[in-house]
Image (cartoon, rainbow, N blue to C red; front, side, top):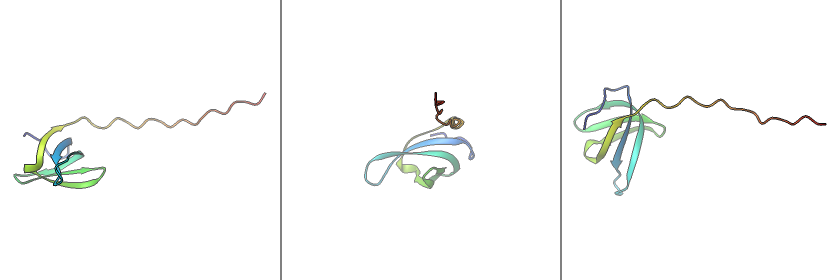
Length: 76
């Protein structure tokens, strides 16, 4: 499995101790022979390499949409 350099956005699919698969999506902080560390919405996740099913670099998140206020109809 080839991961990009730290600082890039990645998604890592891995197996939890319960046997369920889950994803970590966020910035790759580090990767060594034993552990991959991803900083995502759930915080920093330390993932054992042996639990990883797949991993790849992903594009940056889309820009937030501007919020629009509901229009108020003019009273007639």
